[in-house]
Amino acid sequence: MADQPKTAEPARAGLSPRKRQRIVRGVQYAVLVVALVALVLYADWTSLAENFARPDIAEKAFPELFTIALKNTIIYSVGGFFFSFVFGLVLALMRLSQVRPYRWIAGIYIEIFRGLPALLIFLLILFLPIALPGFEVPGGKYGEGILGLTLVGSAYQAEVFRAGLQAVPKGQTEAARSLGMSAGRALFTVVIPQAVRIVIPPTTNQFIALLKDSSLILFLGVSGEYVELAKFGNDLSSEQSNATPIMVAGVTYLIVTIPLGYLVRRLEARAGRAR
Image (cartoon, rainbow, N blue to C red; front, side, top):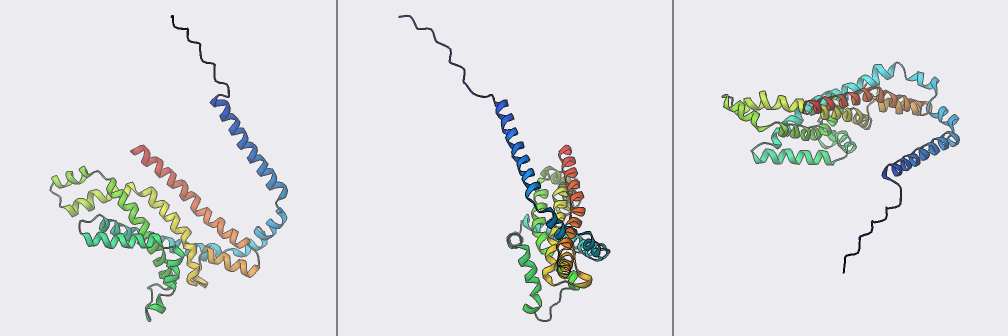
């Protein structure tokens, strides 16, 4: 019996992927428009402006906003970043050391200070004089703030450095050793400089994180000449019974962090092209 001729399968009914994509995109735009219309119609803009954007109260933040609060925020952040950079590199080298106790010490430190909330670390620093009578952090409130940021930042910076050190090809070390360099000299003149270049983008991100974490210094009870942006905005808001100073402090943070974020993206793009 001759084989029956095969009939062509019926074409699948339905929308093409391109049409489905257009419909999904149209729905997303419609949801966005509805949300914006609802925000415009139902938000109490007068009340929001009265409580968060009063120009007369915002003027009272100047010039102390820049001469004291922002200056102190930068001092805390740069100091914490410098020491966390140095200490983080030491921890990374210990984590990669062939000496097992060094690896244990670095690993325990990193896990503890990455696992603890930053706020808790600052509160522990606040109670250090009670736990250790007579103990004082050098530098007073500046020293306490920088110490807190260093403890928080160094644990994260250590992992950034560890990744950078491991990303340097082993052939670089072997080539340096073949030229007669000692292991230490090869590490500090060949490997570490290359690792630093690799970790510049995430390290800049770490500085942004420390800049924001500096707001936790207010829990150290700073006042007067030691206040940073968050404490300054909070105190002035309490004094004026209005949230405008907090908004001003927030905008000041953005003035600093947004350009830094742009710089990070440029550095990442440059690093990607180099690779």
